[in-house]
Length: 103
Image 1 (cartoon, rainbow, N blue to C red):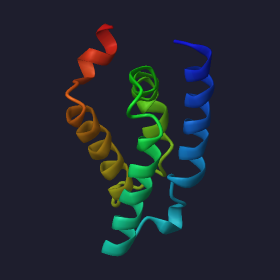
Image 2: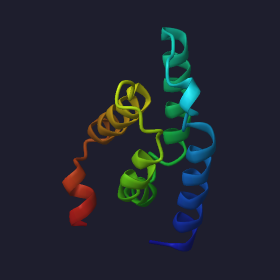
Image 3: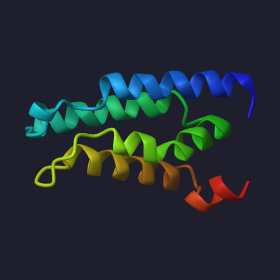
Image 4: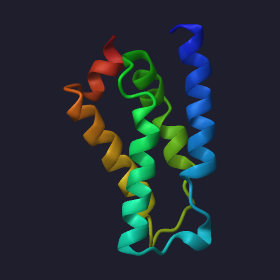
């Protein structure tokens, strides 16, 4: 991994933590909020999805990103939307998770 990828992945991770992790009181949401959240996810992943090394870096951080969501057993819609988005992104790019970990 090159230096640029390392710095960029740190920035992308911090951006995710600041703008894509909801506060506990924001856990209930409307369809419009769900759509807005999806737009933010799309914008965030557009920053690194075209770069294989960056995408690999972000997939390697998936546990850190996923565990940052507030724990609410009755309402984990944001977490499920995030995981679904990342899985879809991998398959859209014609890749599987094993591709990232075997290279």
